[in-house]
Every structure is written in C-alpha cells, then in structure tokens.
Image 1: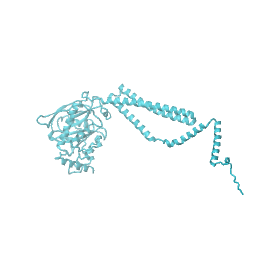
Image 2: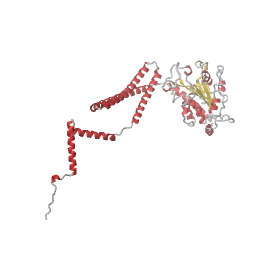
Image 3: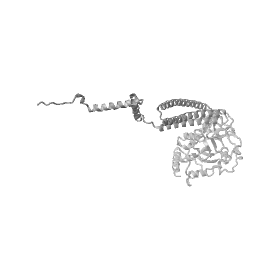
Image 4: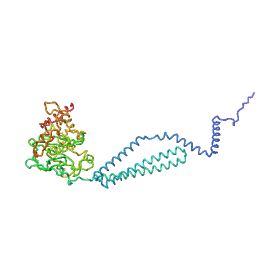
Length: 472
C-alpha cells in the first residue's frame, strides 16, 4: 500500500525569528505612524535615540576635572598680583611721600586695573550661574541652546578682557620695577650732624700697623636730639689690638637691636665702629622703608663715650656689651682691616642700606665669617639681631666659664652681667673727652678674655664652650 506523505505548503513554513521580526516591524510602523501624527518623524526618533546615547555615554567619556588645582592656581595668581602691587606702591610711597601727586595717581591706576580685573571675573561667573538657574527652571530646549551660545560668547569676551588687563598690569609693574632699579645712592645730601662726615684713614709709610683715622666722632650728648659736635683725628696701632666686644642696643623690643663692634687695645682706650643708616635732616628710621632704597649706608668710627653713651643714657635704650672669646690676634687684626676696606668702598661709591641683607648686624657677620675661616655657621639669628648674643653663646664665642673658678654662666647670667644701663646711670662724661672712664665703667663685673695663643687653642676653646652652652 502506498503511503502518502502530506507536507506543509511553503507559505506556511514561518521561521520563529521571522515572526518576531514581522511583529516588531508592525509595532514599529504603528509607533512611527502615531509619532508622525504628533509631528515627529522617524528621523526625529533616530535623532532622539542618538542624543540619548550620547548623553548616556558622556559621563564616561569626559570625566569631571579636579577643581582644587584650578582654585589653587587662581589663589596663587591673586596672591602674586596683590603682593607685587603692595611692593610697588610702598616703593613709590617711600620715594615720593604721601603728599605727591605721582603717588596717588599710581595708586589710582594700579587699584583701578586690579579692581576691573576682579570685576570682570566675578561678574561673569555670577551672570553664568544666574542664567543656568533660569534655564533649569524653564526647561525650554531652544532657549537653553540660545543661552549656551550667549554664555560661550561671554566666556570668550571675559578671557580677552582678562588677558588685556593682565598685560596692562604687567607693563605698569615692570615699568615701576625698572624705575626702582635706577634709583642711585648719593654722597651729598642734607645729612644729620651725627652722620655728616665719612671716616677716612692713612697708613704710616714706615709702619703699616699705624693707622691714622680722620673724622672719628666724639660728640658730647646732652639729650637724644642735642649734642656738641666734635670730629677728631686719632692714630691707633693695630699691633696693640687685644680683643673685640660686641654691643647690642635694644630699642624696638627683644628681637631687634642695633649692633656695634668695639676694638680693645693694650695701652689705649677702645674704638667703636657702627654701620648705620645715613639719615637726612628731618628723617627718622623705618624698618619697612629700609627695604625700598630709602637710606644710604654709613660707617661711623667713634669713641665709646659718644656712640654707646648716646644709646644708654641720652636715648634710654637697653644696652649690653659682650666680650668675644677664643680669638687670635691676627683674627682681630683682620676684622679691623675689614672695617677699613668697608670705609674705602663706601667712600668710593655709596650703597643702600637694606633691612634684610645689608644692615648693622649681618654685615658684621659677613666680615667676621671671612676672617675666622668660616668658623661661624649660618644661622637665622643673624637676621634676628636681638638674638645675636644667644647665637654667639651657642657657637662658643662667649665663654661659659669666664671666671674660670666660679659657677659657669648661663645666657641669663650673661645678660645680667653685661647690662650697661645700671652701671652708667647718672654718668656725665662732659669732662672726660679723651679719657677711658666711661669704657672702664661699662665693663665692670665682666671678665675680659685673653687672646688665644694658637689656632688649635681657639678652636678647642670654642668647641668646648659650645658643648657646655647646651647644658645651660
């Protein structure tokens, strides 16, 4: 018997995937027609899908940048602008004074440029935040697009304005800096009497140790502002040098002091040297003005009855005298010669006093470090002149046991014993013009150290004193 096999017609052979595709197309066609009725075509749908895809992938493709670096850079730029402006304005203020038209025109120009620069940046950011807030509240796409275009235009304008203002400020500042660097010190001004003369010297042709100094100051001070002027000539013998004393005069708290150096002689009264500002008549010292080429530097050679007395008695400053230990005679002599060289340099070409790098204390340190073969280490107290005695104590230049048989001296003991004011209270030196009574009286109860016999003795003694100072 023949078996008949029935098979499905070809049009009934429907692949399941084809069926799903057919349904999907049908639904898609229905959806498109529905969207078309509402004014959206298939191109709009594809655009929406594309936009959605971009929005979904945007956070991953453009990670947010770190904001702290941006803010740090802005802070540093603002700080640089402010400090540079303050420096230039102070330089102009101290050169021309507060009554000068130049001073006030410069202040108005610099402040105006910086204020405009600040306004451009602050106002633009405030406007952007305000427009973003309005846009987010309305949620209107076309207006948002217009706002973005406006913001981009404003951003470009802001950058251009910022660059122009920064360039203008830089030009002003560099012109001011160039002017400042051209200010030259002078030898001839209307000087105050106590700095009106410059010390000079000559050497004896047959004996180079004999030095004749001209314009050694020896005033009789009646009060802080009045004195009987006297400029003298004095001959000293460098072969008779027997030691060095450092005097600190405190006039502005414990951190700031004026430093003087006195040279002792075997058979003669001491001679003092002092680096000071060369004040004009009617001028007063200002530590801040000392940064801005306001004062010339002056070297004064004077008798102690003048230059120390005026501070301890006439002005009422607190004065302390410290004899330096562990020095050889040739080191003292070399330090004295360095003062003579400094006098030559200042007489040949005047220079500016600088509160930080060229003042009464660190100039002495520069010279002493050279003549001592770098035995004096660098230390921050070189710039904090009030602490100079503590530095000398720590490096062994002040003997911790000056009496040899007594109790070692701490720094407090040194300050107590070397305080000059109680020793010369009520002292009148008008009758002791060329005597040594004042110099002897200010050294009462202070053991005077002898000179070291050799380099080894000086180093060993300083090292031992430095180690002992750590215990007190």
